Amino acid sequence: MFQRARRGKVALRLALCGQSGSGKTYSALLVAAGLGGRVAVIDTEQGSSELYSGLCEFDVLRLDPPYSPQRYVWALSEAARAGYELCVVDSLTQAWSGEGGVLSMVDAARDAKGTGRGAATRDPWGEPIRAHYQLMHALAAYPGHVIVTLRVRTQWQLVSQPFSQAQGAAPRAVRVGLGPEQRPGIECEFTTVLELSQNHVATAIKDRTGLFGSRAERLSQATGSRLRRWLDADWLAGAATTGFTFQSALDSIAACGTMPSLTRLWARSSAAWKQTPWFRELSNAVWERMRLLDEQPAPDLGDWVEG
Image (cartoon, rainbow, N blue to C red; front, top):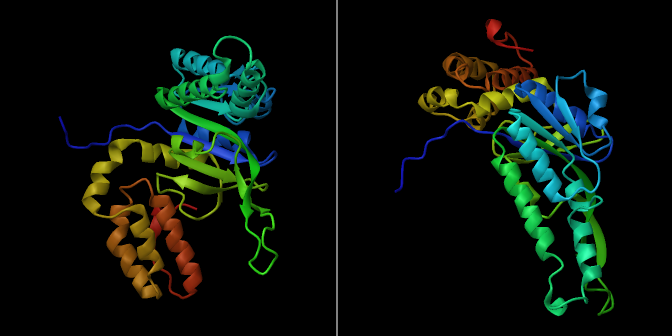
């Protein structure tokens, strides 16, 4: 039967991707500290997570080669069995391109092709991709929050030569940016995907929470706290009665062209905003708008504003 859609308590699926040195492990543990609960870390990076043991309390499982998807599934099941509310997988890239990962399994299947009965029709990608799907299912089914880190690789695109050049000229490869070093489309498996730059600043590639938008920010424990408030369903009843969304509130602030209009917006909306998990972000947006308007007197925001 069809039933009325109702949002229950949601578990986070967060992916942090970036180059070496961009702070993926560090940021993942900061966010984990803000989310709270017992934290397990599946470490495939030679114990790099333990360098940051002072950020929050966590238990670590060092996963050595081979980095097969089946071993990741086993590690996730052990974390679930032990009752960890949050599991950090650092990193998920090894399950794809690391020693014993999917690509290694494909190479091994190709090497074995040509031997045995039915070799001519054997698909070297068949079993590795099935193992990868099992890993994705294990991530989705984990009974708690999951944060994964992903290395990135340079992405290239073939571009045709200009028409003025000789016909038949070969297309040239053009760098179009960076992408997660995992199976194409891996972003679909996560609630939010953030890309970290070399100065540890995160930008959203995909964001179903609406908390990040287009702005860049350094991840912190406060980021984890914001995500936790969004994940908890308790605020929904209050937010439903206010008749606005996070983005619509930001749009209302941005639309204020004078200080009096901003003051009126605050007087009209601040009480409703305080009932939502976005109050800190909205109040900071008001302060930023005040700075841009650069007019006095400023509205009296009182003790509600943080930062």
